[in-house]
Length: 210
Picture 1: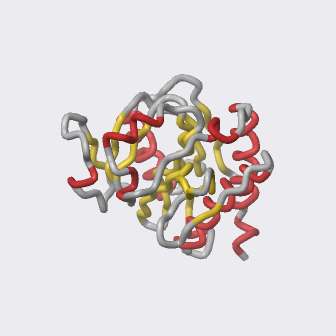
Picture 2: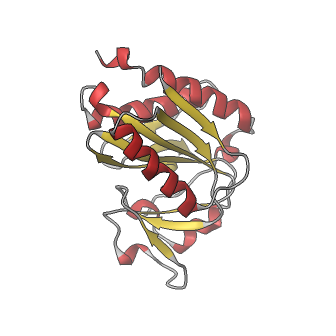
Picture 3: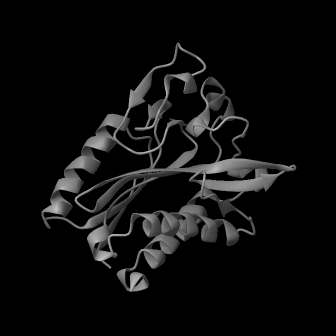
């Protein structure tokens, strides 16, 4: 399948990343570039999606960057794995719901390979884990679709600072906590990315949609 896989080792500037995504989006729309899956991290930054509310910001001193993706507010920081993508849904039945489910299943399948049970939630998009008698969020998804090209991406909390989330209501969901992968199991970071990449490629295969 013609998807370029890109991985950045050092944290990538948020504006640079979004600019690159938008340029790739235009090229994919015009059939001048391959689809893209890009693994990276950002330095600490708070971003807000299109359904963001000012009341989701608890610490009014923080700077919040408004974005075009769906979803509400989140925090990106070193130790959090981000996967950006530019994926052509016109090759995949033009089914946005199935695409989101495909992303969720790819993450869930990856956790399962490390003997970690996780789940999705139709009311609250993302990936959740039951831990110490609570359901906690480990992965967030926020996408935008233009001319049937899906872009932006998802994030998974690996070993980032959980205190960063105390300044906001993550994803606008009250009374739900954030959990890190390292709270559950000391998983090898590089191995996790390799398995996630394989699951994404397998599950995004055009043949799986037909």
